[in-house]
Length: 80
Image 1 (cartoon, rainbow, N blue to C red):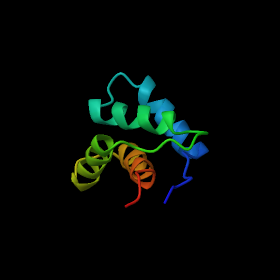
Image 2: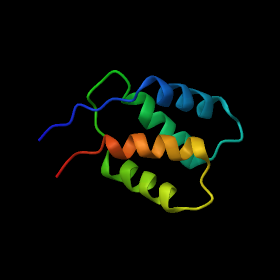
Image 3: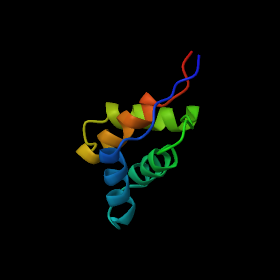
Image 4: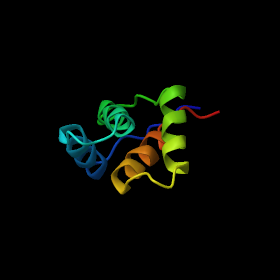
């Protein structure tokens, strides 16, 4: 079954801010790139990106913006 989820405007804005932030973590930038790549398309998250997003959500130190991006990336992972 195919999903048709896309990154919404709030996620795109968050991703853009993260990518411009020189202090953003490597994980945050990776998730931001994935979220932007999925904006306006039906592309789905890779398994590796979904794993990164899940780890970010399980880490209590993760920032709110990274959590937003991780949630979006997980929503767009291929269904089983």
